[in-house]
Image 1 (cartoon, rainbow, N blue to C red):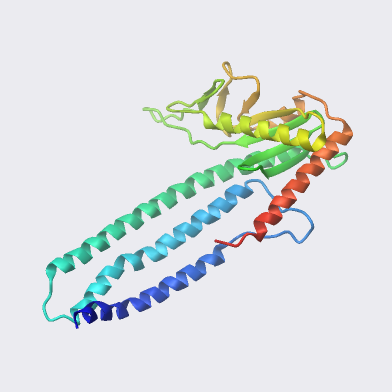
Image 2: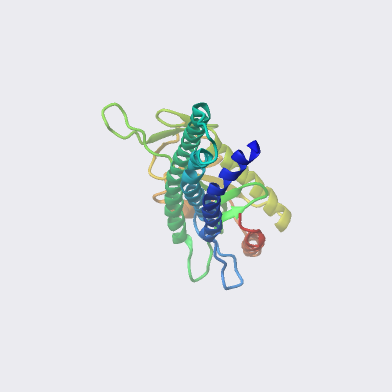
Length: 302
């Protein structure tokens, strides 16, 4: 029967399928999420980026392990066909080879994409950790007039840092960008800030300023609903390592390099919070962080 010639070679694919199942099972072991043993959310600087980096490494592992198995499957199947046919069809063999080649190219592109994604996430995490470390200097053990929250979840996105001070609340966003090199090999490290965009040496971006304003808008409205009074909220965009030209910058967002961020936030006084409102803001943000953390932990691992 002709159909047996196509069905029986599938036997040679069973070991590869078993190995692929083991790879998929091992992927779940890469879940690096941990839960605090205390009654408090476990959040640290760059927590969202850490989770995305774990997912990127998991994707790299999956594509690197399954890629060779899937790419060799057509050739293994074709070699199995050789045992059950009397006459070789070289056109069929050419199709098997072409399919394997296309699969190799596809998985190679996926691995390159994962590699580039991991590089970007590592750079962003390094900058986020540096900014978080700088913000930690605001915390005073005696009176606790300052409080820093990391990776504050909103309804549709995440705010990198929220700083509560006696003089207002800061939405701090961090963006990591590498320095371009000019034709003589020198780094170009100056960015010009305009009202709606950032002008880097060879490109421009609008999204960082938009995201910062979006965070300010959401947080101010949300705190006003929870506290019952308007709360002064100011946006801060941090570009670690860059020299900032703010001649044409809008006054609503502070764009800084971040090396003296804690001192800048301490000296900047754009409002005044009473002690009850100050404490209510902190408790409200703590409750939201705790609620979102519990919701995240209840979600099944993918």
